[in-house]
Image (cartoon, rainbow, N blue to C red; front, side, top):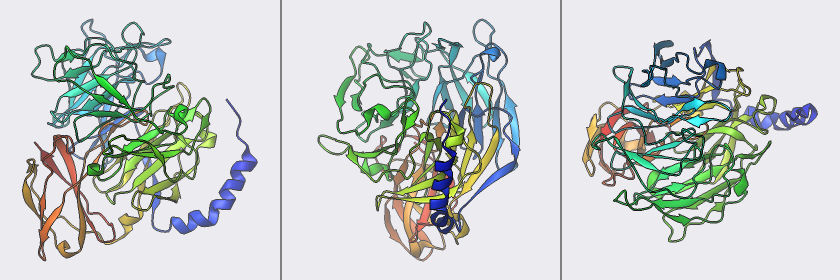
Amino acid sequence: MTQPNNKTNLQEETDLGTFIAQGTTTDKWQVLSYSAPILPIHAALLRTGKIFFFCGSGNDPNRLNTPYDSVVWDVSKGTFTRQKPPLDSNNQPIDLFCAGHSFRPDGMLLVAGGTLRYDPFYGSPSALMFDPIAEKWVKIPSMNNGRWYPTVLTLGSGRIFAVSGPDKDGKLNRQPEIYSAFFANGWNAFPTTSSIPSYAHLFLLSSGKVFYSGAQMGGNYGVTPRILTLPEAFTQSISEKVVTGLQASGFGDQAASVLLPPAQDQKVMILGGGSGNAATNRVNIVDLKATNPTYVAAKPLNYARMHHSAVLLPDRTVFVCNGSKMNEDTTQSMLPAEIYNPATNTWTIVAKQNVPRVYHSVALLLPDGRVVTAGGNPQRRVNELRLEIYSPAYMSRSRPIIQSAPQTLTYGLQFTIQTPQAANIKWVSLIRPMATTHSCDTEQRLVDIPINSRNATSLNVTVTNNRNIAIPGWYMLFISDNNGTPSVATWTRIS
């Protein structure tokens, strides 16, 4: 592993010292007084407001076929509740290390794939769901073949799309499949398709098509960004359209990418990433509403990063933390966080986190607008268990309040939000809770809810009628004032 240049790092910190101090007068990081009981390689925000962590064997081959814990973290109480996944058909523990996951419309987290063996890795065909209310695992039918490092994506129909990853024999699984409780066997597979990289960053588009951004885990094997069209019949093949223009296309390893807010704009940003030991500060954006979408350069990151996390904030900015300038090197990862404003194409350096986090780290938006960071596994059996929470500047301001809003919504519905700050509300937003691992999250999106009218104490707003914009399921409802300051969220479900 390349050794850091301490003189260079010190000089960078000195040069940026004044700027950082000026930029962090109201935002802050806090390392919690307790740690996670397991390495949180996989993390999801449940509709209860609690956070779900699991890791299976946790990148430790000595733990293969041993019992595995998962935990539900009640952030407000600082407590963890342990669960154990069910056994497979051979009465062996199901290893969910390096599975894929996304939320079903009912709020259950579907988890597919995992690890059958190490070095080389073989993928598990297992599939489970986690019930956020009962806080327990539920077995569902297994996939047609194994997947390790797969991508799992919820579609506008509520069905679950799974793609990529080494199969149960260690060969690339090139047969995408879809899960639905209404299928006789749970899973139906399409014909084999071209290679899709492991943990490919996929986004559901307003058309129902699926976009691969060019970010993934590991090399992309020459696979370019592309739009996938899923046919109605499983006997038909998935068609593809290449998206051009991505700069530094070989630096997709552990890059981050997000559907920029609001989701209606259909713009995807890819940022950072690595190739071998080196990281890039490259940022590109593609407008997927264009007839021939093409990536264009945007303002680059202040720091080259890989293994980083990108989180959509309710003020419609993108918060970036974690990562390193070199592959899995925590000495190169003490980097200030950064926030991107899509409206101005600018990055702002904000407070520097205290805990360096690289491979197997995560970040999640909380309903109160803070961001949890956790994990880190730069070497096998070297596990970062400390937890840290970032409070953006808006946490220190006077914030609008949602007094009441419906707990269930339907597409195209007009509804009322009661708030004493109605006269000064700029945005109403729905944010889908994150379910993330390896810098990849197919879930998070911010959906604009247009304001039709208002009076002194209420807002009249309308839900989109496009299920591909607002995928059915649970969301955090935020209102933000004219300064961009968001409320604490309330939970609502679209169906």
